[in-house]
Image (cartoon, rainbow, N blue to C red; front, side, top):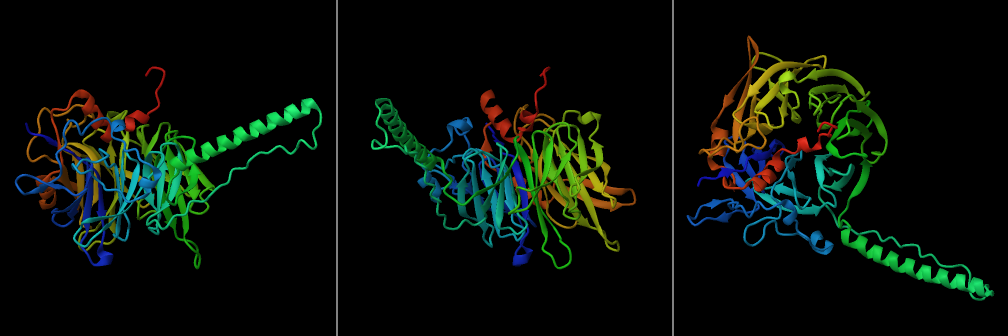
Length: 499
């Protein structure tokens, strides 16, 4: 029986013009990361290394129903000494210790790629070779599950926001780490048998000595326990919320003439809060609070051409446009009655060159909604307001997208497994080739902004090669596990009494 293919969960364009190299499109699908030539769509590499098939060709290991076991049964347990060492990404039989890779980032200089593997909570850093291959430089397992990652503007530090509301910093390239030793204070009685003479006081002194010995033993056990769960790499807790974090953004604004740029960290959480904090090392200082959402906030976006503007979206059926430096709400944009209950799963800023003879650029904001095949299109006007340009209808649910050139082309990853508009209804049977990606091309005409949707040579090449297999014979429990890896924002929505 034919199998489905894992859809691309994350897309990112690695711009390498500064190195004199061609751009590379990096994508994650299932438990693998792929690299493609941005100009042609030709596959360049896959990580972890694929295995050879019986026909002599190379492809990703085929998933089986056994591979799709619940994540909690696949978590790797090991000592911190082993975790701190460089571990092989895959076992000898080709299986991995994770089922999906939800986040992939690239540094602005195009030299490194950062990826999060889900079940083992591991942040991995790769360097990209000239031919597009992945070279793993480090792997660091976090203590709590990360929900969002970002890179500081200088490409030197990783920001990791986790489900417990904390934000940690990790160096992009870890150096030698020496764990600080903290000596526990051992309580000791001040009195001795030379200063205590009564029978009652001697018994009390004996009890104090017994308690001191027990406290010393407990401190020793606690110290050994902390040693087992300690993170054996350089990391630092810089800020925290009292709620689960959903997104984090690092941004830099130019300072006054002759002064250094001003760095900020923006964080959003499940409790409708957006916090503006100072950058490292003063992240504990809160500059502003952007309050206006009435339900969970899922995505933040600061357009590259308007760094003083913030666009946020979540589960309350609206987009909010902020002057985040002052914490002021600038505009509220309803998504529409037909999209009631939809949750914003992505906000992307795309900028294109104007046609020949025109000046300036076309600045577009694209908004994806969880479990829908529509892509909402807006233009950001000169007064920093959003103007709706309608919705782009695609052949499958929108998962992620990447702008690949300055001529108006965007590659969109689609869910070819589930019915369009559904997060849990699988198609009856797969078709070949499956539409994993589509190309969206924008242009300016006399009627304004227009677009065309379909395959081009790049998406046709990506779709023809495909990804790793996803059996169509999975039972209901296994399918729900796969659904939750792609569609999990609905689980964050707060329940009402009626629910």
